[in-house]
Amino acid sequence: MNTFAKTPTPPTTSFAPVNHYLTVLTRYADFKGRSSRSEYWYFFLINILVSFVLSFIIALISPTVASIVNMLYFLVILLPAVAVAVRRMHDVDKEWWYALIPVYNLILAITEGTKGPNQYGADPEATTIKTV
Image (cartoon, rainbow, N blue to C red):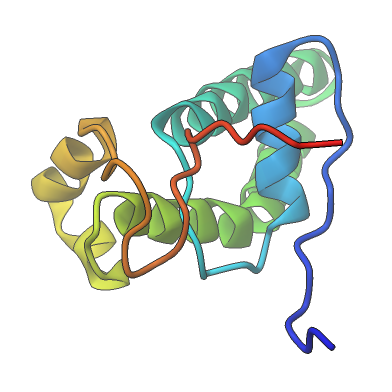
């Protein structure tokens, strides 16, 4: 009997960046395991786009409301952003606190992850072949 909680399966779409974004959101409080570079950077990119579009559209109605909505979006997305940053550090075989070092964390986020499993889990880029 497996007593470990299983990671929820994210919804899939035909557009890969959205899949990565949804994966991060479904694993919003998962600080264990690893996240690939593409998952991290697509999440970062889509956050910027959503924030910009949300601010622009609501600013047409009211700039004050736009700043409040943007702040609420930031608060909602904060925990998933921290979780994916921690998992990204795990992918390069570093501890979570490396995400707090200003320039070095950017270098680590760009760096290719450890090939194969490391102390934090399986390689997120590894492809598995399922046998029937």
